[in-house]
Structures are given as structure tokens and as C-alpha cells.
Length: 356
Image 1 (cartoon, rainbow, N blue to C red):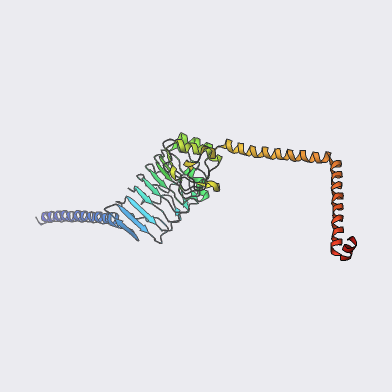
Image 2: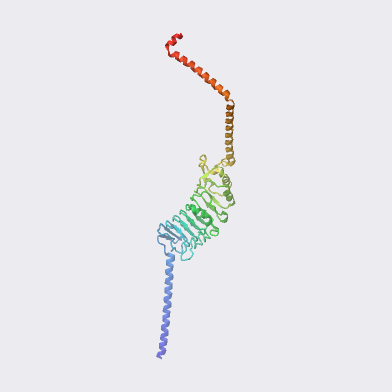
């Protein structure tokens, strides 16, 4: 009987032990979940300001040289400024290999020089990317790969000459199939970048405050073909001569340049400050300039011919001219002798009395 009771007692202890163990595991799991929630949802990165209501995390003027890796999961707008991030490495915005919900990413004033390939992986919902006011020297051909929903890309005051040449390869439809707005202001560009405008869904290309002096006929043809795109071109030093003729007529006949009224001439001096739209047709007419040049050449030839004829006449009449010059010389000599004699008489009183 005791043996049987001991067996039952042993079974009850085991059952109680397993019950307590299960409860411990349950509470431990709940504690882990609570801790995890607090860490990912509420923790704000060091040197950052978090506003959960607007989904914005702002990190300014830190000493970090990399992108913060503990961005809260609820973040939709991330602003990094003055962080000395010289290089955007592959997957710089992926946290533990997971995608984020970012829709706006501002990276201006960070001294970024290099954007490596696949730097923006893990941002499939990003709509706006601002890389303005950096010093980009290298942009990988696959730098923007994975930004399938990107609508706006700002590269104002950021491109150095090497990066400008690499930009066309980086802006491919495979990487940015839905890009609508591209801003390249203040990059000292001398011409419209050689990007495949026809391969994009671009609606706005901002090229203000660059160094564009003229837009040739080939570029104007491309502008005519991309009627959906709006080009912003103010604050460029346009040289208003006949090389601007094709662009002038495009500007007059097209509505693709919203800031057309603010395009002014920089050269020549006589037209400085004159709006390009207000130029006269003859100001940019290459035929008039060519005709004027031809007129000056013709006038020069006529004057040269007259000079040659005059010299030939002088040469053929050199004998008569020589006699004529000798006669003039003798006449002048006789006249001077008479003046000299009269002067001597007037200056000597004795000669004057003899004459009386």
C-alpha cells in the first residue's frame, strides 16, 4: 500500500514540476517580447531626436561616420545631417538584414564622397532621397539599385566632375523605374547631362544655377521629343548669339520650361541682363550674323582694291609726279630766297637807306 502511494506521490510531484516549468517559460517569453518591443519601437538612437507621432527621426552633427543601425521600426522619415559619413556602404540602411518602412531619407551636408553599389538596399518603399550639399566623387552604377518606388532624387550642389560622368550609368530604369523628379542644381554643369531621358518616367529635371551657356540643336531635338518633362533652367549664364537660335525658338514655342521668364543673357555685354524670351529674332539669327560678317569682308576687299589701284596709278605716273615734285621744290626755293632777301633789308637800316 505504501509503495503504491509513493508511486502516486511521485507522479503528482512530476506533474507539478512540469506545470511550474511551463509557467516559467511562458513568463520568460512574455518578458522577452516586452523587452524586444521596447528596444525596437521606443528606443531612440544616440544624438538623435525622435518624434513618433510624425514618424520622424532626426540626427544632426554627430561624430559617427556610419549610418545609425538602431533606427526604430516605426520611422518613416530619417534625417541625417552633419554626420561625416564619407562612404555609403552596401546595405547601409538594412538593420539585421531586414527591410525598413522609410519613405523619406535626407542625407544632406554629410560630406559623402562615395556611394557603393547596393547602398540603399532594404528601402523598397522610399519615395524621396535627398543627397544635396555633399562632395560626391564616385557613384557606383548600381548605387540606387532596389529603389523601385523612388519618386524624387535631389543631388543639388553635390556632384564633382567624376561623379557627373558616372551619373548616367547610375540612373538606369532597372534601378529607378518610377523616378519623376531629378534635381541637379548648382553642380557647374555646362550642358544637359547625357542621361537617357526617354527611359525614365521623369516629369521634372531641375538644372538651375549651373554653367550652361548654350543648348545646341541636338539637345533641343531631344527636348522636343520629351514633351512630358518640365525643364528648370534659370540662373544659367546664357550666351545670346546665333548658337542659341534653336533653343530660342524652342523656348518661344514650348511650355516645357516653367521658369522661362527668368532666363537672362550673360553675354555679349550689349545684351547682358536681357531676358532670352525678349530677344529679337535677328539677335539669334545666324544668317544675319553671317551676312554682317560677309559685308565687313566685302568692304575690306573693296578698300584693298582701291588702295591697289591708287598705288598702280602712282607707279605708272612716277615720271610726271617726279617732275611735278621738282617744280614744286624749285618754286618753294625761289619763294624762300625772296623772303630771305626782304628779311635782310628789313633788318639792316643801311640797306634800307640805299634802297631809298
